[in-house]
Image (tube, rainbow, N blue to C red; front, side, top):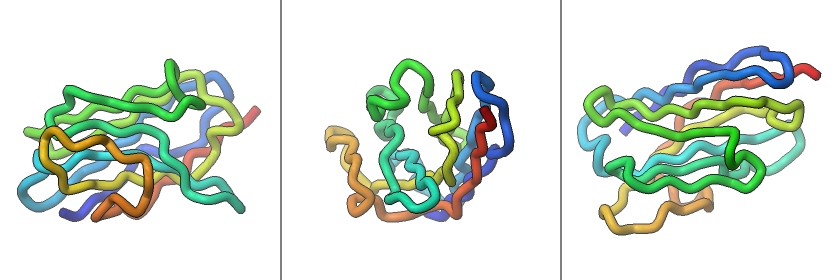
Length: 126
């Protein structure tokens, strides 16, 4: 699967953005999907993940109750709705795909993911 992330931009603190991750190729519904981010000078970190069917989600504590991950398997697209943005959310955001059986956990480690999008920059001004 090939992934392309989009939707980043400049937003004021407290604002919202929705990121999209479009997949090409078949079998999108066989992948758990994750969003990660990497701030300048820091390691890439897990943000949110969603199971193949969309029935399970998991979030980093830092974004829980502010971000929502979702997916539309018919459109082969995953989304990350980000509300209440803070300056510390500034980073390049990446989507990633993990080929998984339906009951597999949603992993938070980058090493578990098989494919990555190119990243989209989110800048939150305070």
